[in-house]
Image (cartoon, rainbow, N blue to C red; front, side, top):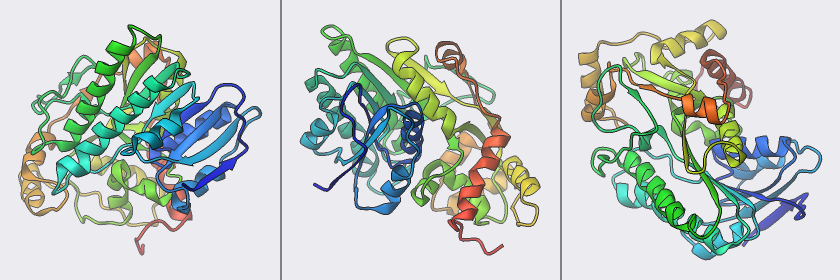
Length: 356
């Protein structure tokens, strides 16, 4: 196993962040290091610069340290080693694939099996006191909902299916692994647990690997992949707010808490207009096509389907974030600011494919 260590200080508390090379995971590591915490960052391949270079470059405040270690979520012994001796675990590692020809093995299994290995490792390690699990609004949103509905953390995506919503099934199933495990372990050990449920996450990418997942929505605009836009409302939260919510949940909030992180909503064409105002010299698609024409487009698009379009287009869904605001004392960055802050790293590092 390749292992590289930077300023390791094994004295004091140690926070393990799984999936540290990912979009949310990277920002959590940065947040913790600025707070002077000792962080053990797990990555799939420590020899891949796109996974680790931005981690190496992060600022570390006095008292903090960073250890980068390889971990394979499917290898229970690898997970055990990574978590051994830690006091805190933030589990962000998961796939961000929404659709696949092999949804069970490519989407559901990595989330469920990986999470089972993480909670098993926590149980084996007597040192872990706090555990935060990264989930999603997908673990909350049911298949059927009405225009204008406001969902709360009391809702679970129990009706997610492998055929229609494998990502929702993966997120719901992984969260149930955590909650079922915590219900039993709390009888013997005082381990604090919380789950964080972000919507579409925007904000500064720290690596070209971060342009997938949520940021694919932004990249379609940057690269002008579509001449027109679907009539789709998008719930947005800043990645820096998501990271802060994870870190606060380690010590704040109720044990077993479930926290939605959503900063606001905006139509896709409105997002493009925000970027057009900020970067007027670039060309941005901003024309929105009618709903029924959008259904035809989705029928031939490789990333979406008509069934998805009928559920998500035109209808607007909202989220109750009061628990996060009350328990974690969260305040959200304005989503216009978040959208604008997403772009500089993309353009300055030439991560875009656009010629305009």
